[in-house]
Image (cartoon, rainbow over all chains, first blue to last red; front, side, top):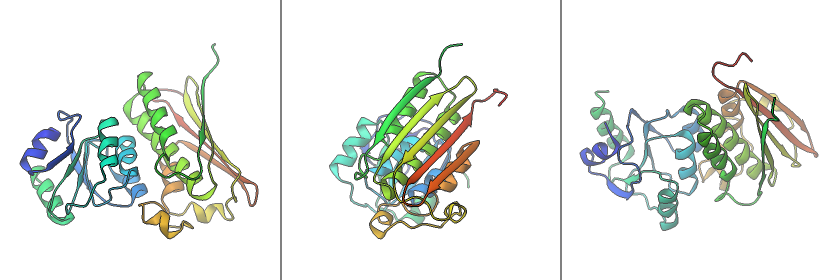
Length: 110
Length: 145
């Protein structure tokens, strides 16, 4: 599944979408950035409520397929600009983390 | 045999927003050199954790990356307060980071453990009051290290 297909099926809001054809191979949820870097896999859709600038570096370095900000958590314009600059797919959803993860999981038959 | 390729970065101590810039640059450089993606991921995550540690605890420092034919070496050096008990600091979940750092999603006590997890060799030299030097190596796939 591509990031674009995931975004369409979960009805996600686009904050930045530089690489819509990137393959999504799984999911990971977490807000502690080191935890995410230690455990998330390359190609995961990363679900979080954390929205500071460091999430862009973490997504880039951990090589996740996209970031999905849950619960409509506020994202500052400079973070969105940074996501575009670093070519990170950044989306948002009003669902809470649990519901969002259930939806992501259902797409992967988890 | 040609000299190994070296990169040097200064890591600013007071700026969380720019923390990780050196790691992102290294990631880009390794990608340009067509290194395999998992090696790039391991090197850049280990280096990022080290950078963040220097920002949190040591008011910055330096990062040197050396590309050998069989391995990538990362040396992070600071003149910060040093680590009192290295084996305690290596335990997952142990952290001395302050609340403002935790509110950003850091300080979970995973930095050093992640650096060890993602590298093949890691050495910490630290003296309280003098500073800390962390040397990490990631072996390249297929290299007989």
